[in-house]
Amino acid sequence: MLAAATDHFGGVDVLVNNAGIYVISPLVETTLEQWNKLFSINVTGVFLGAKHVVPYLAERGGGSIINLSSVAGLLGAAGHACYGASKGAVRILTKDLAAELGAQNIRVNSIHPTYVKTAMADYGAALAGKSLDELGRDMSELGRLAEPEDVANVIVFLAADESHYLTGAEFVVDGGGGASILSV
Ligand SMILES: NC(=O)c1ccc[n+]([C@@H]2O[C@H](COP(=O)([O-])OP(=O)(O)OC[C@H]3O[C@@H](n4cnc5c(N)ncnc54)[C@H](O)[C@@H]3O)[C@@H](O)[C@H]2O)c1
Image 1: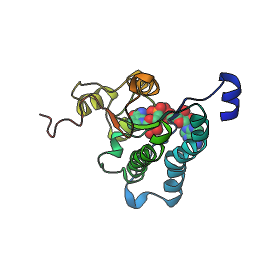
Image 2: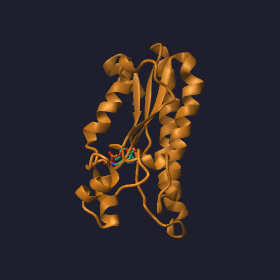
Image 3: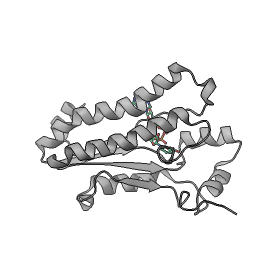
Image 4: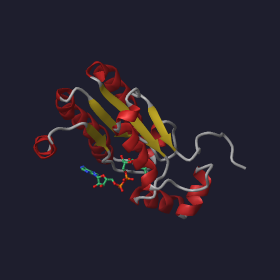
């Protein structure tokens, strides 16, 4: 894929590790098969993407790797042992790579969204027995869930030269949901 992108565009400057799957499951009901599958996509996928893109970015004099973690990679939640652990791994992998690759002018940052209006939020809302609007009111100080564009805009910024001094950082896209300890 990297060779094809280089042929087509003349080089690769940015990798967005976006692919991921979401499982909510109580610990004792979570199977090893579920755990291994989720980690192979959410964590090993990020490792492999970064490992293979680095030579291409280095050849261009630097670049940007953007990893999709989650607010579940910052704090715990019931039923989230598998998914949360995978997103926590992405958070620290991001910082490890930032430390290792900075000298090559390769920046590595993580993004931590709350529920975004995609299939994942539909799944979470259904399990919580709530509508997306109710979930948005519960989880955000802005009273609404994130739109995909709210995350995409941060990705665009981290891909652009305007963010050239940012690496190893966490970008929380949660509508202020993690800013307070109590909702009344
Ligand atoms: N939507 C949310 O509420 C939310 C919140 C926090 C973090 N995230 C993270 O954002 C990222 C994008 O999620 P989304 O909301 O767009 O979810 P989504 O389910 O709408 O899309 C996930 C994408 O990953 C792809 N994918 C899954 N397994 C794959 C594999 N083995 N190989 C290649 N592609 C694969 C799917 O085809 C799909 O296009 C994920 O890493 C997710 O964990 C999402």
